[in-house]
Length: 332
Image (cartoon, rainbow, N blue to C red; front, side, top):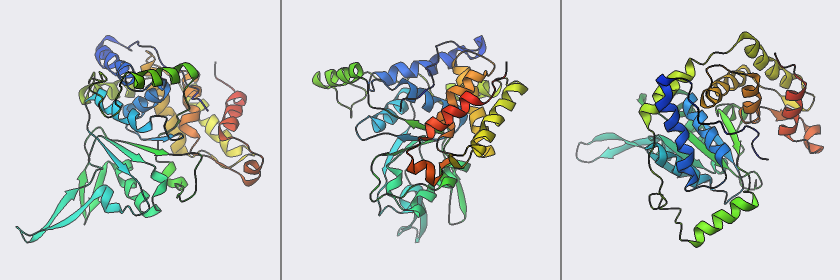
């Protein structure tokens, strides 16, 4: 299903943050040089960076999930690493481990791929729970603890985890506690006909997904702009009526007959954070109910669980959430 939130216009909130806003909004143009038709997903990743959160990317193979993460990091001038999650992957393969140094006759820490700015956790549901759990501390605390020593991760830090929604054989579904650690779950749809024609045209002209520089992708923002933008997002105002609306939406999921698990207070907080970031990217210093509606599906769809009867009836999570948004009174 295509994401429901629109792409915000390129309009900064104030002169003080104009440079950061303009730079971040130019990221979409840079990513588009490599990835066609995924502007909504790029916006979602930018929102996650602005909120210091993480993203679960769901889509069938071949919709450019890996290329998207690489293009985003290249346009932001950030370091990125990719880990292919497999059944035999161990926690130390992700976080790093102590190795014996013959020169010093002692153990030294060898950092794992998690020590980066954007970690692409490819097919995260193909590794056992103990390896999935190795990311929990990194995602929540932005640090890794090995042998009683905590080591800070670089800033910014984002985990972009991918999973295939149609293939479940040999997979290990993420537990609800870990799903709740992801700020957003973004669905990457198959491209529209015109977008797919453009993809094929680029490949016919010699586009190489491994060579982003040849595709013209250049850094247009960086850590400094992200830090300035995060500070600006924190200043976006939220009226009491909008706060109450967010809570009402979250509580409605707990009362929905189709759900056996509703949204927790952490989910309501995530919806608040993402709505603020979306409002800022849209050029406003305040949150509207429409901002909340725009981010409700990607912020909440992975925090709820259908009941057995609803699953048997083929009920879709997004459909239930959409009906909740249509029935919860909107503040005026």
